[in-house]
Length: 269
Image (cartoon, rainbow, N blue to C red; front, side, top):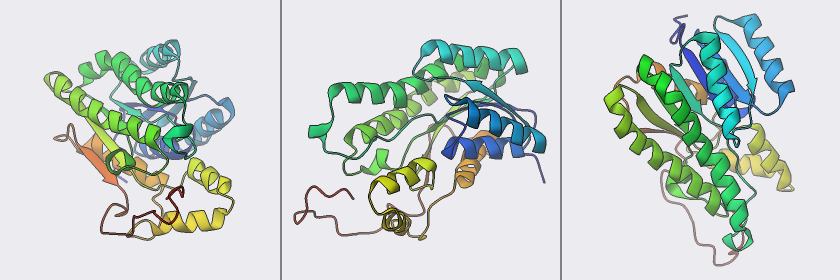
């Protein structure tokens, strides 16, 4: 197998589960030295041990709460101390709150979500960029399909994802002078622990998962490995890509569908 990112140093935030874990696995599989962070030591240390036993790349776990600026500074510092450089940053850490109308969101809830989903991307990028400029590396910011098309009961989440996409385009303009590329990856329904947890909360997990799969033209969920492959393309082969958004949705946004909700305006779709 050709190693598509051999010897390069990659940082992945929120890398112990879901799309972040998929990125860590794919980048290690292709020879990268991957520093990944999360808040939970057990999952992070287990993934580090598993991947280092497989290779051919390396995995290095660092505990980090991305809502804390000092933790982010420490993540960058330890990466450079260990590997001497940074070639790619994948900003992935974030969450999707439970669906509810705007009436039931507080201003503090929105501020907290902005801090977790957007400000952390800003800070990781800010502190990594002096090193990325040296390697003419790249940033991949994980956004979401719903940042473009919207989602019922998710006004705060959609706002954060739209902000990520716009911020990335602006940063791509600024950093082009330094040879640093900045792109976004916007997944649709990818089967992750967060998606499965949301399905369980619905009261009928089987029906929720079936509905989630049927939202795509391809009739299935995306996988975390496919997500990692999309991010690897932007880091490794997409050398003329900056300021773009790769949508990996299985065709969820294509075609017409019934959207009126007059008969049940409070239903979450």
